[in-house]
Length: 254
Image 1 (cartoon, rainbow, N blue to C red):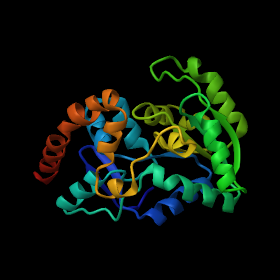
Image 2: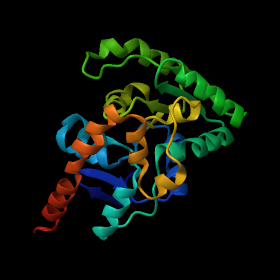
Image 3: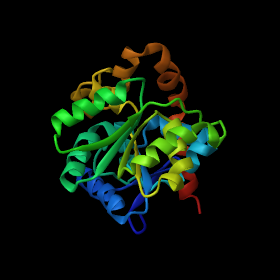
């Protein structure tokens, strides 16, 4: 949002906002009725933004960018542009749904594996009885295919006219898709939440809170999915320090 403080880690913009402030900013986006989407940057996103122009564009066009990752908090502090606190999509989801129920907002769950969104919806309804979940969908989405390939899924979403869409496709797909469809689904506000529906549904374990607080959530994910996560955490994300240092120096150079 215009006029709000924002820093950059690598090429990725990050808004300087508290957890409560993030909830209020998202609610304000819905109330404004102009749509938009929210991203939650972590180390991997900083690296992807360096290598994937479409992903970087998605970040540049986002309405709100919330820091999701202890390493980014440390990086911001070292750069003397500290961020108030970690605000992951997984931590934000339930409080946001509670606020949505209080405000009478409608919600649509989009993504995750077959049946996961439905299970997550059941769990959320049991926990927050007044929550209005107006639809769930787990379509196969190819962001490299023509728009016609995703038309049916997006039409189903649009037909429900949700205030909020929880987009659980993982990076970079969910961010790029939100950027691609933001005008189509306006005034819905979308939030990229990665594996959060799996966590809520109980189909995937989340790291214990103490691991998340000290920046070891990546180690837990690696232990749970070593084949898939090795390339991400061990190989790709090792580029993060160099990216941050290079861009930080370039901004300090007159």
